[in-house]
Image (cartoon, rainbow, N blue to C red; front, side):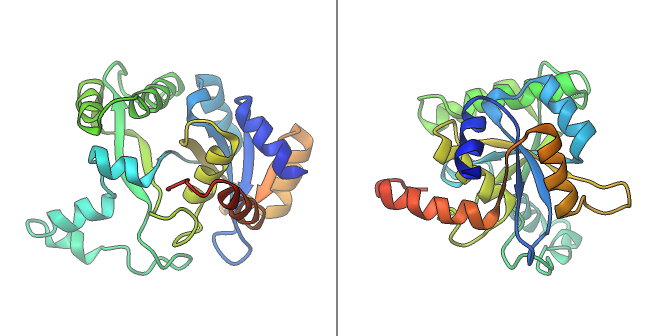
Length: 237
């Protein structure tokens, strides 16, 4: 029932919460479909979540357009700047795959790029541009015209074979978008506590109940995703 409620909320442009796993990050991300992002939603995420605000894009689309993982950019730049290779993320304690971080962007119509209205514009337009019904090289040209990098919105690239090789919030949130039938980009933000740590699981479930926001777990998403894929065998993500 919680999954059905969460998917309906996604379709309606509402916020949901995603808790990953007790044996992974043990974190909850405030999540919304990128196509529905407004500055009011960014304000809510900044004030009630407080973590890093990031926007997800599907792996294959990112590769077709030419938006790489940031770790690959750093590795390639390591010939000139060796310290970048020394800092390769090979020891992430909760994850044995590469970081999902992509590049950072601002829309060219923003000023500094960080205010809520600026980030809302960057995210909403980015979502509109990348999901155009155009060849990837034309989308890339549109991105170059409308966006500058680096900026204040962090992109996250999903891994290939969604939820098979990595079970991070990036992949969990992307799966929710696919299952909800919206554009497969989510904007997410970790929920922070007031004790210098992430907000714990119990506090997040309490917040969800108090604010009537659906909350789902990684285990619930993976189970639903397996069923969804079995019913949609042609889905290639």
